[in-house]
Image (cartoon, rainbow, N blue to C red; front, side):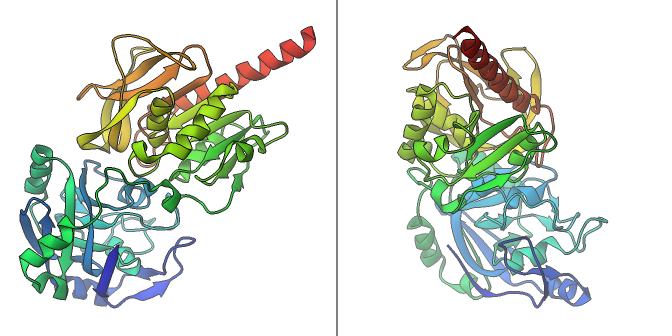
Length: 419
């Protein structure tokens, strides 16, 4: 939870749907930023970093993770997968492109806190409508700037992701022992069930672009706005469902059920997502084409009988090399995950739903980055093919999904003709 005690004076203007009012930067707010409050970053192992306030002033706690993306901070901050995480940017200069009303991936900033080295004094982009820092303040997101993010990142690489607290203003004046206790009593990410906290409350529809070819039930575990858009661009009508949906809700989509089912990205520990795993197993039993990304990949792994585990510091950024073992091609991909699937990469595995194999691996550390069933229409990847932000190398994965649905439709038509 974020508690704020003070923010810089701003002039409010309409923000993204469902978000607090955004702010318009001016000379006065730029002057206020130069008079920043003292701030302190406290890690759960006791290491501290001193800096200055950035965004809202107050205190926040979460899991400290670092992102290696050189751009796309607006998409990163509004990605629901960052719920309860404090993002450390490895890029030294942040805020150059300001903030706009087009690039949000959800209706609000989900990150628990934000850490940068050198914030831009002002944005320099024709698309910007306000400053990044004003948006952070407007949405009560506590941040810290002016500290050595390289040293902090090296520390997290060596020790692993851990809980952290950001304290600025009056909060930074409390005894460090008290601040450390606040951090150490905050919730851990392991065991956290967070998908329902970020999911839509009610189902909604993203219409197909052009002629409708298929209808898909997309289970929102923390979905990013660009994902149903990428599906819609391929003639798919997307029915986005809450994370609490059951198999009856999924089968109610479309005429006679959906042509396919999609599981999105999302925050939390996949080991805690028993409801979602049960739903996915029901989908697989019915032979409905399935595609999952990120959290959806981990849930497919669990549904097939594989375990999951927490990575030391995770993959977060838009420059991760992944090999598609089906084609041998290497993709540069966008990642945001702290957990992974524990599946053998050297052989196929018999599962209750047929043979499964690891389809993609990370070339940095051999982490499982994709799964596919060989005897059923289902596959998943551990990264973000929607490319918001990020490279477009993995866009073909949406085409594979349409191909699966095309093949299933053709099979049904042939069966009806033979009957």
